[in-house]
Length: 287
Image 1: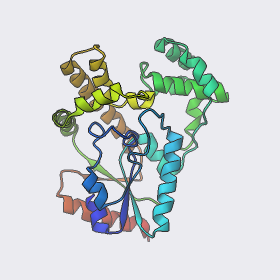
Image 2: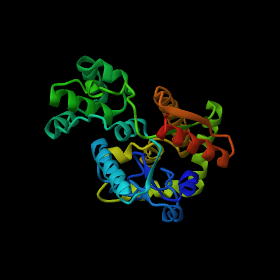
Image 3: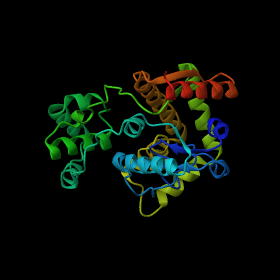
Image 4: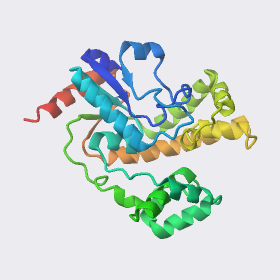
C-alpha cells in the first residue's frame, strides 16, 4: 500500500490464491474495505467459495486486470503471494487443461495414499513435489498425466528458467525465527477477530465449500475442529505448524528466482519504499 500511495496512479493486483474467495476474509488477511476503497484492488472477492477457482482462471483474470489497468494509463502493483500463481502471472506459464471425466474417475478412489503411489509410478518428479496427503494436488497431477498422456511435471517448462521480465520484482526478507513468530501472532490475532465464527459460517453454507477453498491454511484445520477431529488448541497448533512449513517452501521458491531484489522488511517503511522505487526505476532503465 505504501508503494501504491507513493505512486499515486497505482492499482493493486492480489496474487493470493485464496483472497479470490468471498466470505473468506479474516483467514486470508484481506485488506480492509476502507483500504481497498483508497486504492483499487483486483482479484479479491471474485469467486464464490463453492467454486474451484483454478490457476488457469486466476491467470486469465490477472492478465485481464493488467490490461485494463494499462488501458487506464495507471501502474499495476502485484502483491503476494502464492508462488506458482506468481510465476503464472509474471511469466505467462503454459498451464495444462482440464480433464473432468478422468478427474471424476480418480475421485472415486477414496485412498489418497493409493493415488499418491500411482502418481509416483507415472510421474515421480511431480510426486516428489507434493505431500502424500495433499489429495487435491495429487488428483490434479494424475488428472493431467492420465488425461493428456503427458507428465504433469512436464508442464513446468520455464519453471527452472527465469527469462527477462518487464516487471520489477521486490522481495521482503525476514529471519526465520521472526517469520515463525509473526505466523503464530497472526493466528492469535485472527482468532480474536472472529476467525472461528467465519469458518463456522462457511461450514454451514450451501452450496458447500469447494475442495480448493476448504484446503486453505487455517480454514482446513478449523473445519477439522468443527468436524470433531481435534480440539481448538490442536487445530491452531496444526495450522501454525503447517503455515510455517508452507512459508519455508515459499521462501525457497522465491529465493530461486534471481530476478527478485531482496530488501530487509525490518527497515523503515518509507526507506523501503524509496529503495523499491529506485530499484524499479533501474529495472525500467537498465542502461
